[in-house]
Image 1 (cartoon, rainbow, N blue to C red):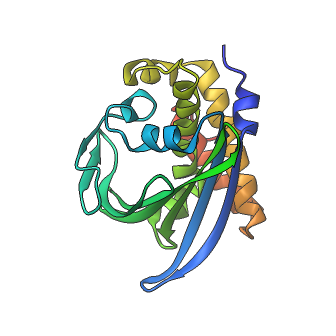
Image 2: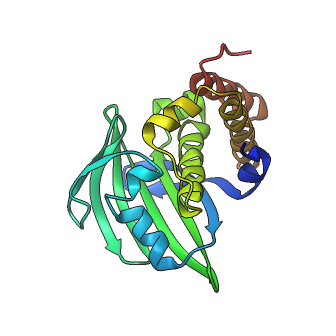
Image 3: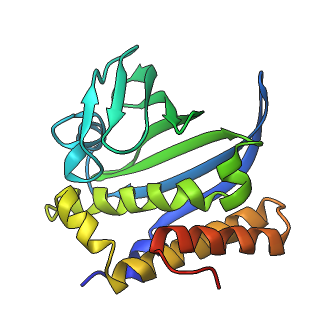
Length: 211
């Protein structure tokens, strides 16, 4: 059984804004520190054989300029790569394009921090309707999967799908959604609007009606 509260507390979340050439954008940042080396964490995040052990099956060319595709999810183009420190890529899904950047940061001997920024246009319909939790919960489950993988207890995508139907997963999603609502409010979003978006996000992930 997973200590869900511990897993949720292990993550740091923030929401902000950024000016792009195409207009104003919202920025979601998520981070977690792992008991491993920068080289191992980099390999876990960029090795096509290891990625499916904690995230999703991936195809394509995971090199600078290459196009990748996660099975049943987003795809995009690798725009920047600086091993073992950082990489950036487009995140293309449902006709929308956003951007992700991953940074691998040494903390101290034997510990390394994973940092991810996800940048989306302010007028992105999913962001307006669901808030940062729309992508934040998904990334948070990915970081949970990465923690299990690095601990040597990873699960297959099929087992992950089964876990999504459990009460443990529903608690994880609900707590994660609440934390993303708090991060959204801290960034200045109206609390009522943030909570309404969070409720829609929780319902979408759990399959439960909006309360």
